Length: 72
Image 1 (tube, rainbow, N blue to C red):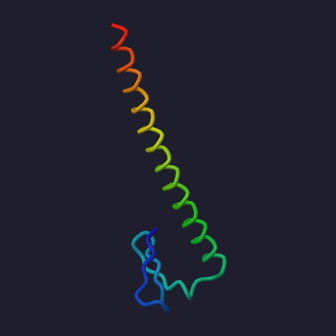
Image 2 (image 1 turned 90 degrees about the vertical axis):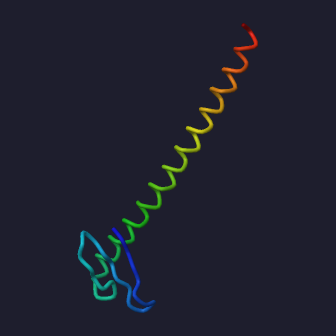
Image 3 (image 1 turned 45 degrees about the horizontal axis):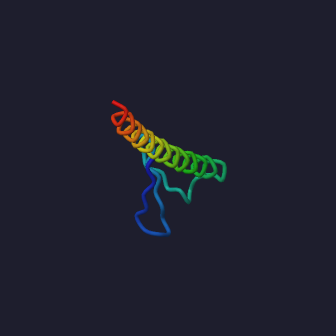
């Protein structure tokens, strides 16, 4: 889903290669668009969270590696 605006009062939705004038769509379709936008936002947020967890895990593993070197 890719939403674009040609001008502020005339937004255009580009979906699967087709363009739709958002102001001309039904309320039901607009709600579906909003749901997709929310889902996209949530996915991005969780992807970012996973990246942070991965970075933290790598940092902890590096710390453990250094501490174990001191035992050798």
